[in-house]
Image 1 (cartoon, helix red, strand yellow):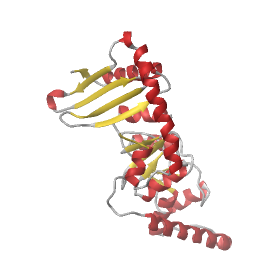
Image 2 (tube, helix red, strand yellow; image 1 turned 90 degrees about the horizontal axis):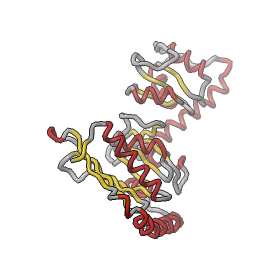
Image 3 (tube, helix red, strand yellow; image 1 turned 180 degrees about the horizontal axis):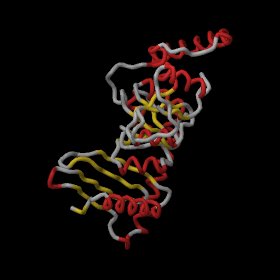
Length: 281
């Protein structure tokens, strides 16, 4: 087992003693031989490496719950008043977690979800909503990630998720799946952006008239029922559709500040797909 991050209930040295008392072997770095990782806030690169290797990860509350089940010795007798307060906090946290545990059904139930970008609501609120819906919110994108929820300026996490063909949901799609209707202020904030994108489209199309058609369809392993990837530009908007051959696939549209940025992203995505073995159909 490996410890990483900052913990709220115990000092790391105390938590390490508790794990050792429970029979765990605590090491300093993550490797292919690591069985599990216990993480707190600001988990960093160790967490990302554990995710990439498919190692089981447990947050502080999950670790404490497992330790309570195994019954190890925890704190010194001198700290009895503090221990009582801490125990009360843990009990309250467990009750809150149990109350927030959803039914086994639902689009996010049991899913590993990553959040990236800027949203209309606070990211902490969105994280709580996803966790209440049964999702396990992670910090980094890997092959073990089930889906990515993105806002404006999704950045490298969005690009990596798209390359790995992980399910992508924008804010409105996520709210719809969570059963939450956007507020009036959110709707007003989104309308100007849509109008601006529509106005920019004719100008971008005109400026690219001599640059050829920005659309492509690539396939991989077509002989064994493989995958397809399509991408097209419409002014400052790039539309991507991908999935298994023979299916409708998933479609995502992303807007850019200018046609030049849209074209650069288009060319970047095409190069990335061809490196992965995709060829033009």
